[in-house]
Image 1: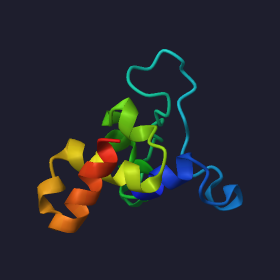
Image 2: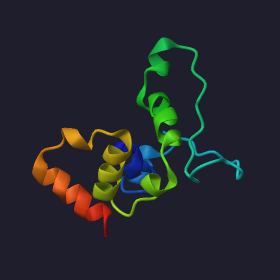
Image 3: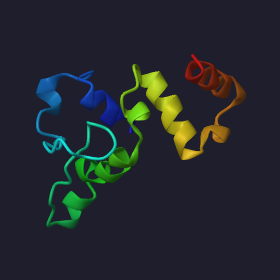
Length: 102
């Protein structure tokens, strides 16, 4: 999910990521404004590719996670929303919690 965040927020070079993910052009989407369109895939190989697998998880994230200001904030908020923050070591968990309370 971190790689998708970097692609959508133009952290990577546009020449490399051009055409990889398609944003929805419908303005009436529920949730956040960076909804992705699920690309139709006929082959099993394509269905298991990165660009197809990330659509549903990203579209399910809340607005504040997707529109995070930095990659670290996105990572912390994503872990908190998925309930996996308890899997982090104590130093990383404290760092995430302190960044989320700012």
